[in-house]
Figure 1 (spheres, rainbow, N blue to C red):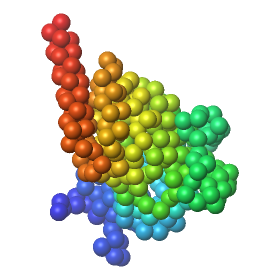
Figure 2 (figure 1 turned 180 degrees about the vertical axis):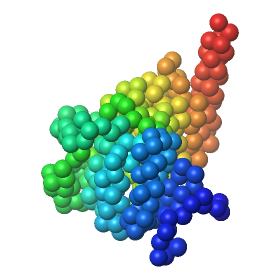
Figure 3 (figure 1 turned 60 degrees about the vertical axis):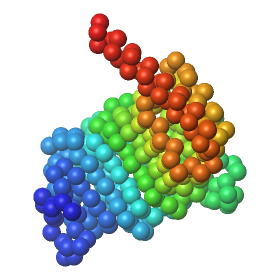
Figure 4 (figure 1 turned 90 degrees about the vertical axis):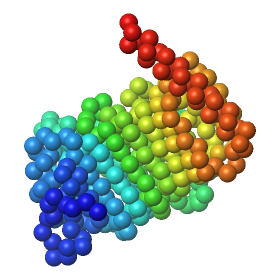
Length: 314
């Protein structure tokens, strides 16, 4: 294990926030409280290469407190971070909306926008990101709409900002519908988006793809969907075919040979720029289907390399 460069004072050393250079790792609201002054100092110094991880927070209420503390910094933490990670945290119905409020602050802070709030996006505005009316539990869907109505959403993400990586992994407990609000608040500055191992359904991933399409060319180029319950790749295909994605991880999902045929078709698009596609641990894909899609990917990679060489020789 790497030796921390600095550790904030705490009555319980095992719960201390850890600072590794420009990286912070917190596991409770107590950790965040103890580390706020040091984190604030770096943020005020306009150091936009900082990475922050919230890990192993087992109570959704404690996660909410952590994010509120970070949001209340001046500048807000998300407006200066290069990377934000939530890992192994327990979610509830409201957690994705609360995280969405943090991402809504991922734009450079100024006094002019300190109190600005723009109207919240409505699912009716875009069919691609509508809430799932066929949730596993209809009561969960009704409760989620009530949470949205009372959540007081923050500023919408803008086309500027420093947040280049957002990772939310192994954060279980939220129903499928609850993720849609989070997808609508993804900052356009993102280059890498990792939502792996959250047991996301086809509906949840479909809503994510709809939001990414709305981002246009500001869509992150690297997308990690590994370890979910994903099979229907229809809404992912345009992102691949249009050349918005260069790396996609679909490992450990529920893909089958039909999914592979669809992926193969997207890979033949002239605009496709995908050079990395991971499909391991999808037991429903036959070896023949896997060979076909890998051959298609190899053709895309070869074409991209040839285009790059031609440009360099001009």
